[in-house]
Amino acid sequence: MFKKANAPVDAHQYVEARLSDYLDEQLPESERALVRQHLQNCDRCQASLRSLSWTVKLLKQVPAPALPRQFTLPVPARARVGSGSPNWLKWGLSAASVAAAFIFLFLLTTDLLSQGPSGRGAQALAPAAAPAPPTFVGFVVTSAPAATSAPASGRSSSAPIPTLAVPTDVAQFAQPTEDAATKDSAAPTSTAPSVSSAALPATEGAPAAGGGGATRSGTSPPFPNQSIAQPKTVAAGNVTPRQENVFSEPNAKSKLLGLLSRGELVQILRRDESGDWLEIIFPADNNAGFVGWVSSKSIKLVGNAKLKSLPSEETTEAAPLQPATIQPTATKQPTNTPSPTLSPTATPSPAPARTETLTFTPTSAVAANQPEVSAPVATTRGAQLTTLRLGEIAAALIALVLGASAFVLARRS
Amino acid sequence: MIQAAQRGDVPSFNQLVRAYQNLVYHVAYRVLGDSEAASDATQDAFISAYKNIKSFRGGSFKAWLLRIVTNACYDQLRAKQRKPTASLDALLVDPDNPAPGLGEANDESPENFAERQELSSWIEKGLQTLPPDQRVTLVLSDVQGFAYDEIAQATQSNVGTVKSRLSRARAHLREFLLAQEELLPASYRLKGEAAESGRLVAEDV
Image (tube, rainbow over all chains, first blue to last red; front, top):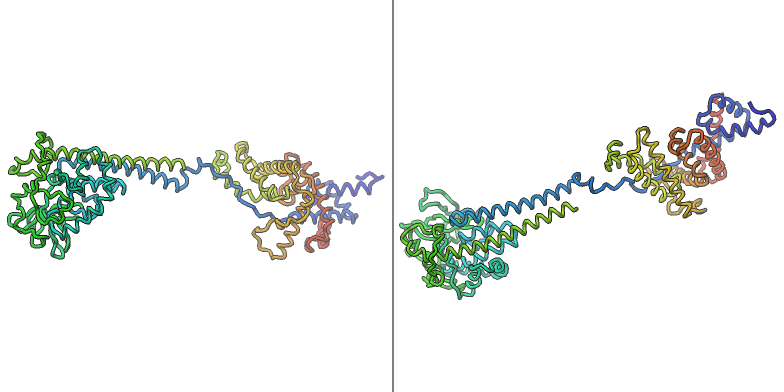
């Protein structure tokens, strides 16, 4: 195979050039035989093969370097949306907040619609969603919308409540003496100042708005709508037994409405004819007033109120004509002074448009008085409703905007 | 997985990345001899693979990927030539990175491990003395153990070219290693190889 002349040199070169393939067994059989034959007789080429094999062996033992980092590609945002649970969470939360805003609007609308015609109906609804402070035991009908707005947000709930609660408290707790009065006076003084600033913008422009500030100053008439539009409390009393049932009728066999505990302060609306039962506003757990009957034996009247001097069923309807005294300082006034405070408000307005909607006019005995009284009530009340509506719709809108912005934020991120 | 990646699904593609990143980085590291350049080449290769994965028409994905890696390494080498950062210093042990392969899971003794790292650094130096084509071929063949046809596909050449490059690369590296033999760890020196080589020759007789 090798040219004879330079066979030795050529043979070495020939083999040397094929050692790599020989090592890998990649040589054709014919060449492999030649290489093998030469190797057996040539130490030099054997050494060459040996060192080549050694080199390859070393190369195979070279360790893999440590990976300095992961080379995975960044997952684009498009691929991430919908796969990560945090995104679902965000979407869910924002959707929930929007839904909450709508539910709130719905509740508000329902509430406003049901409020006008039935004061007590609204009142009964109120406890369902009224986490108002306990000191507002006394407020009733008009507290209903305020109470429902409370869950919306701390900011918006504070506005409507005091607008209503402050005068109500002053009016209702005017009659009871020191005991109850001092207790209650804490409520308005603590809540009113902080609230009045918030309440004023909300009530601005509404006729009723003046009343809030004026009542506090003691120079303007009380809220006629409140002293009239709701059952008038005539006294207050403390519960003496450890527990006492409240019934729906002046009758222990009637429906059980709730339980009172010892020491609880209840506002008394009237007594029944026998004097055995008192109609009271009692605080439910959530502090919206319920109206019910409780045994008069279980109630210790505060101050110098006497059971017998309380109005019975027959005279109850006249109670609104003896509204609470106006002054915020009335807490010192022990008795229920029939004040002339109604006169300014009882402006003879010949528009008893909404008289029939007022629930406190069941008997005809006082019907004669009603138009005078209720007419302004109706208007003032309407105005107040407007105020409420504005404030609460604003609150609802804020909630909506917050929910929507959360939604938008979630989408962006 | 490859089909999903071909539809542009990044998570699926990343599974491929996880499967092959060790191989790709190892090739790049041996070819480039520099962990930073190897990282860049590896990242470039995977990005390029993601962009071009639709052009993958079946066959060996590994070979297809190797071709991309090889090209990425050539790109890095060209960039290195324009801006040579590694001069003769590259032949010295890099004090900051004396042991490529550290952190590699191993169950060998510390002595063996240290010797392997030392060998690694010598081979690395020897590889850097080779022309890029030979270096790539040698790495793919002897370090990674690919077949000639796979290497031919990866380097866009043919098996004959691979054989000749490999032959020259091995011979060249052998000279380098023989020149350094006394510096190599004792267990890796040529002296103990006589018996095996003798067997190599003898068994075919």
